[in-house]
Image 1 (cartoon, rainbow, N blue to C red):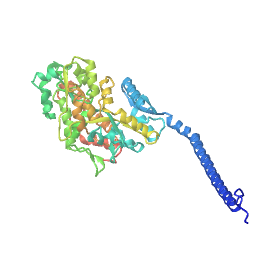
Image 2 (image 1 turned 120 degrees about the horizontal axis):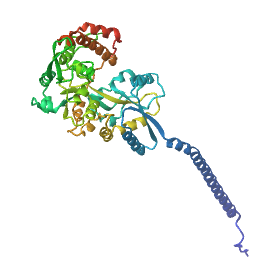
Image 3 (image 1 turned 180 degrees about the vertical axis):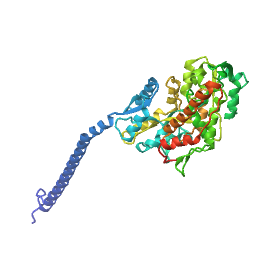
Length: 468
């Protein structure tokens, strides 16, 4: 009789199988735990690295950068307000305004730029005509936001080798200021100025000039001007004599420099311009006895003067009640006027280019330029952006600048200031002879030009241009 199996007795093979499965499960669980622990350790290390290095990066980013802005004769209160508005938008950029003295300003700027001096503004206001001398030390302006605010012509004045190195900040030009009451005597209206060429202007000026006969110290009768028709002709007491003469030279398409002979050569058109300029004296429209042209105009003793924006402010200061208006100078050829912008440049060797460009973008927004224009006084500000110019009220003496800006051009000559000085010295020599030998004795006026003398002075006194 068979013995029955005990159901409680374990089966050895089954038990061994379960133990093996438990061991496998334990190993899998341990691997999972190990990998989990490794993952936690690596994650902790990454977080630790971030916590160690992130604060240092944040400290660098949050440290404000200070840039220096060098400018001249500006309304400081308005400018400081503009700077505060900029800093509110850009808390990591601080702007330090440093208004520079006009004394020897060009030499100081040129010297520091050419020597890469660190004692320099991060943004510097210069005359656009200086760019030729220092462009190798400047960074070109490539921001379309900034450049789109200006006409091509005024940007061209700040361009060299197709690169724009200066942002036009404010600009100046020659305009006519005329006494409305005097012109009304000959029924001459404001619209008539748009039809005038230079010859017509001289004729009108002669017609409103008033003279009287008088006896000189030699008991000879001479003709004395008691009211000048136009303050043009002398290099001595005409405030903008050099620029007026340059304008005439440009408009007459005169030859100035011969690139073949590499010498200054004054052609007949150059001499025509010189003679025309002095004819306002030879025709008894103006002379040096009248005093400074701006003061004389403000006193009502001169009918027409050619001035710039600062001169207009001076006229208003001298005589707030003077009934005068402004107009564009006469046109010859395709050139209408002589205009020069004060431009902002960025030295290439200083570190804060991006911050400087940000400030330039903000500063040259038309609304900020209008703020500076409206606050002008002794620190005259005429905005260079076409949008800002068009916001100047048409009844303003300064509205005429909106029409001038699109056609602004300048003479590009090497060492331009020295050229000006030599021409001025030459003209003064001509006039000294005239007043000494002719006018005071007989009243006879005859000016004789010797262009070869001026050519000799130019060619012996200044370097040969290399970029004409």
